[in-house]
Length: 269
Image (cartoon, rainbow, N blue to C red; front, side, top):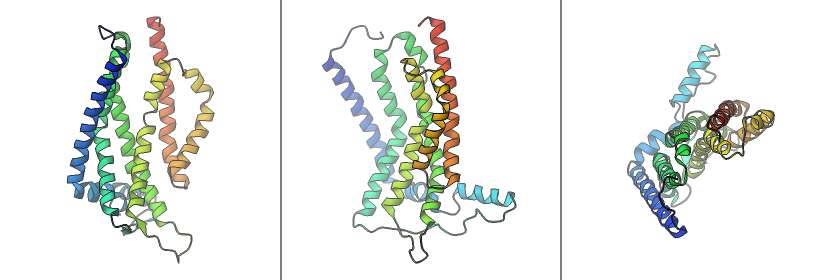
């Protein structure tokens, strides 16, 4: 193992405590920054999906004209107007959003602290096999956040914010409801994009094999469609947009799992 001497259980707890403290400090630091620059966080980022000039809507509008269907996918005015119905609603939204932004920006450092705690328990050859895990884990997480923000969140906001059971029932969306939708969609996609990393470690532990994943590929497709239906609004376009990268990640995970087993066989593990 990497450490020259074994540590007691209490010593491990003490080390883990300091990793948690440093992680919390990083989270607090970025959350405070997000809290201070609330105009940028809210006006430029969080409230972007209700702006008709949001990049996703502009792209859809150009696609609509390219396909020869005019302005069918174009938005000419804001989707809806947000309202606040609680005395502390806007302050609570400010705190919640700052914590979420702080977590996103500090995620690479937090995972790095977690990795520093786990790494000494690995053998030197195991450490070499997982080189770059912090970089790739952080990269996949951020890709998932961006995918959720630029693809799924705008479609969810557009569909749910404009859907009406009757013209006599206007939509008045509360600020917290809007924030909850956008934050949940982004965070869930960030977690989903960690699938290759999860498969990698499960394969290393001998729990998962590429053969198993190939045999149950059809079951995985069904689960993917179910998951897509849960995290997206109930329209087929959004479900396809979520399902497609999930299926690609699944196929990449199969190749990654096979690669891990190949390397283990070469090393006689």
